[in-house]
Image (cartoon, rainbow, N blue to C red; front, top):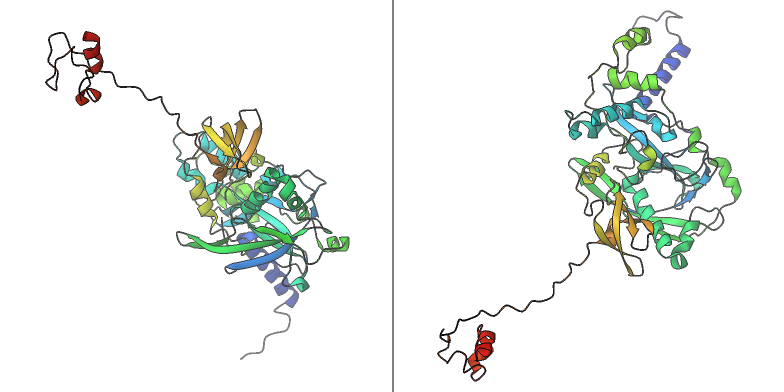
Length: 416
C-alpha cells in the first residue's frame, strides 16, 4: 500500500466535516432540541409499569396551549412538531410552539379555504402535539434528571384525566395538585401497554396513578434542570419555507430559490401538520392529537390519534347532554364546543350556567321523554248495527264477559 503523503489529509478538517454530518443527520431526524451535555432520554421500550417523579422547571417562553404563564414554574412543556417536512423529510418544531408565525400552518390555512382541496391532503401536514417532562426514574436514580418526550395522546391525556378528578372531587383528590412539588410531591405510576395502528406500534398509558413518593427533593436538584425553553430550536421562517417548498438547496442557490419558491400551488404531499383547527391559534388545541413510541422524535404512532380524531363526535355542538360528576350527580347541559383528541373533551354549559370542560365518558344522552299512554279510541257503531259477539247492541252493554274486550263498548253503552 503506497504511503500517504503528509498533509494530504487534515484531521481537524475531517473532524469538523463529521460534526457537520452528525448535525445534519440530527436535524433530519429530530433536531428541535439542543440537549445539555450528559442528559439522556427516558424511554418506554416495552410494556410494563414505570415509576418516575416529574420535576418543575421555569417557563421562559409562551406556552402554545396557554396552560402556564411566562415566569411560572411549570411541570410540562407543550410543543407542536411538523414531521417529514419537504423532500428532505425533516422534523421541525412548529414556531407556533412559542406563538410565532409558521409558514406551514399558514399554508394549511390557505388550503382549508380552498374548496377544491380535500381534507385528506391537509391532514398529513398538521403538526403533532407532543410534551416534554423532566423526570427522575425512581428505579434508577443514579441517572439523575432525564427528559421524557412523548405524544400528548400517549401519556399527557391520561395524566390530565387523572388530574381532572381533583377538580371533580377536590376534598378527596386535591393532593393530586401537589404531584410536581419538590418537598411534598407524588410519584407517577404509569402502566404502558403496546398498541398498534396499521403497521405502527407504540406504547400508551391511558390513566397513570399518582402515589406517595419514597423520597422528596431538595431545591438543589433544580441546578440540574434546564428550562426546555432554552433547548428549543425554533426554525426561522425562511428556513421552514426552503425545506417545505424546495428542501435542502445549497447556500449558493438560495437567491435563485427565493425567486421561484412559494409557487402558487406547489404543495409537498408528504409533510405533516399542526393539530389545531386554526393555525393562527395553536393555544386553542388542548387535547389533540395526537400518537407514538417513546423513542425520541419517533412519530410513527402519531397517525392513530389523527385517525381517531377524525370520527364524528358522539355529542355534536348545541346537543343536549347529561353530565355525571365523580359523585354520580347528574346535571342537564348542552355542548358548546369540543376538541379533536381521542377520547374527546367537551366544553359544556350546565342548566345553572356553569361552563365546564369534561371528558366524553362523563357525558350521556338525555333519556327520551315518555309520552303519556293514550287510551285507544273505541270505534263507534251506528244504530241498527249488530254486536260483533252476537249480543244486542245498545241493550246488553256490560252483561257479558265479551264486553270487557269489545272495542265498541262505549258506543254500545251510550246507545242504551
